[in-house]
Length: 368
Image 1 (cartoon, rainbow, N blue to C red):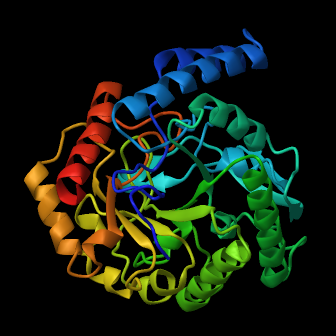
Image 2: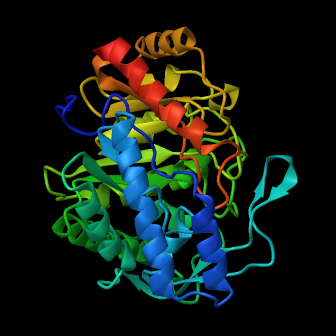
């Protein structure tokens, strides 16, 4: 596998979501209150996507996203538009560090799962790609198929056998990839909190019905089966996240427990990994990534707070990671998006752009 500076993932890259501007918050609130139409909301979203595409290019990024500006949450908006899945308001949200409860919204299985050919993300990408207009690589982010294995989602009366459930999810995602590719996607990112959770000392969002090893093997099989036969010029990366909600996190733990299986065998072109604080553990698990295989995008710059990191300290961390993965196989990015949900993290938009520009500067100095 040959990944160069001209092919994604890039030496200076980013995860995807960006802070929603105030006028977008206002428009969404007015839409929810019935004061504006869906078209009026969409027009505001499109205007702001045009602005942030220009801004990403201005700060020097080679890949750009739509900031996830048409979404409420990083995952539910995509998943609830699959056939056999619906969004709903549960009694409680997810519980993050310090017992912070997230906004109450989730998805659940209501029927046989398949890809919806009229999925709104396809039209959204076509519009976004037209905005980018070849000035950069347009990256599409979607939740990993593994997110559907969180406890409480599968309806066991519909899918008593988890293997049948897995097979339908695999087929749905294969179909999704085919349609995205036909729409022009050449850089696809699977966001996977679930896999990161399998390396946490206490696996989150889990009922204990299966062992850690069984869940890791299943997660690997699902992703690799989804990617079987994908087009050669479609770059697929995975982003392993430990939760990102208003600058808070859900769980901690190094990647050591999943690395021997997932880092070694997951057939993606790159791993976006959280490495912005001590919760992430050290770089030793990177030794399981095959030499010359997937690129490793080190999330050594935090998206949770606005202060810019010390440049020499970041370079030292890259050098440390290069003990386990060749330097030319490394890239850098923020450890997560800046707004995994519409609420956004606790920093300003100016600080967000400064972070992304800083990443480009570091990458230029390290890799040239």
